[in-house]
Length: 190
Image (cartoon, rainbow, N blue to C red; front, side, top):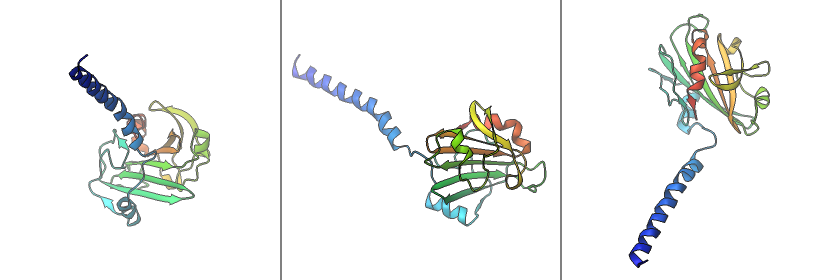
């Protein structure tokens, strides 16, 4: 083999190694859990409202592919406490919260290093929407804990799962959206 062929073979091997290594390098850059920026935390602290609401990428690092129609505003929620970070977004319409026709969808990511299984989720120190009394079900192709919405959560259905070690996802859909909960959950990607 002459030097030209050796150089060409070496170059081809280098390109192949780069292509093979690139996805691994990209995966390493992905944060283990989506967290709010300082600006998002400030928006939450200041109770800023988005009119119209944000779309599928309202939560940085999360894609909500199925957002039902009819929302008029949205609000980002950020809470940090007890070694965990809760980061979510709530889409809502203008109806009163107690109106059974009120549409509301709340998607939240919880970064909690102790979360590994649904049993851990039952014990998670969440500010709102605990899972201590929830039942296990399969919704949207995912094994989740779920329960009927109560008090602070409002009417509807609440579900949550451990996406991967240290990352919990919760979804609260108001009563008019419960029939679409499977599609909503199925469409959530981190």
